[in-house]
Length: 379
Length: 260
Figure (tube, each protein chain N blue to C red):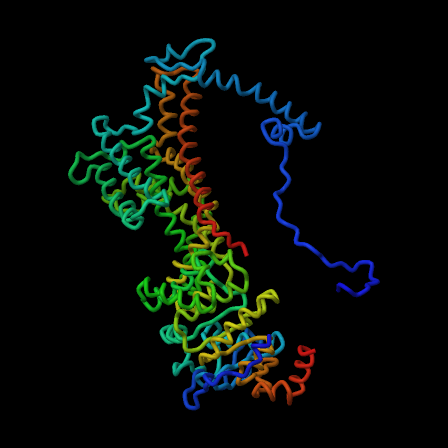
């Protein structure tokens, strides 16, 4: 209190408002960055040098194998034999069509290309948030495109039929992965809601379904679908092998998806459910408008994790005699025209690269979506 | 708070014939625990009722029964002439007419303020989006935050969020408003802005049931104060007599502890 003698030594009255000032800046430029991030302390300096040596030891041979010593052209194994020969890219070049389409007839591969083009034409605009007509786009992708894709790929009913046993390579990988993803996501949501339902029958059925599919390995599921299922069915009923694999993969991953989504549902505060109820929203309105948008956003990393796992697990269809990308690459190792020490490694690196492109793409897109959907509501 | 102590305007009329909410011998249990015991309460249209009591006395549970966020096991609850039973249609009918404001606001964090306000009118009342937005802006202006309409709840202060929650309820044009400790989660500096909004609402004749510890608010707007303890209504009276001449021992003890 001004004007009054105050004996308290701690008495204090502020006389001015301290203005905002910018935070202190660390040393700028390349040198500053190096200093703070690589050579801040003696220990950091030692670690930096060790890591640099390891990189020097690994990276040049790797580059040599991949590019500088690699064989880029050739018609057969002779090109890839020799002392210091790296990757045999000529092998990949010669087999590229097979890797992409399997044994799909060469003169009909335009149908696969067209399907791929139609998919990208639908996928790109829906993935970019600012493009309008999202609803029409979604209808195209979920209703129109699958029908066209089915007709183009199988040929039914107008075009020359191509049996699914002739499909292979990246085509099969993508068909299995995309169908698995598209089916497992909504099914997973329904199962997750079912498992949290108050209705005892719905709940029990969901729990049994989820626990059954999570409890068996995917290999078992695929084996059962291809070996055991025909034993139980009448002799004249024959299911397409690829279709059986598709159903198996889709149900299997929907169980995982359900548990990921249930985790998200559990993280939504009770107040959100209560507010939705108090506004007279119905159960499905509340779920669709309030609960699921928040819950799904929370578990984007888990959902994408499941998608990526599913994408890579498609390679297991090899064991029931369906040649996906990895399967067809491996099958070609035994081609006598191309047997060489470098062939298997080259084929596997190529397959890994293709898998990586798709999985990394999904991962980056999920990171982008997470950032975009962040409304900064951590209370 | 001098302007708050002004006498209530004449607009705050209570209907003598029209019943808004009626609880008859209402009982509720949580498992074995008897939370609400023989509650009898008749709220007339236009009444402003403040419900006070120690924590765990069942006051929140009681008002949550009125819009069926909690289920009662015995007795009757009649809201706006509709008896609450297991009939989901009846429950929705009641919820359409009863607005609720929560202690923790419970705004929808993934929607903007405007979307929070228009959601129920659009989906429950089937109102065209444009009209719902007009109504929402009207109520956001009333709670004095129209400029925040396109922000997300996470960007607002607690007091602003609670005012949005009130506006959101009003957008459904409810006949009855329930408040469940609307100021308990707020910083002291923000309590007044929310209470002012509630006073304004009371002055317009809204039927209100408020669970609150704001005794100044009770004195100013309530025409009845209800005191609950251990699941029972222990005492009810008009605010002047309730605060100045409490009868029950429990009420006296409670008041002595909160009014220093």
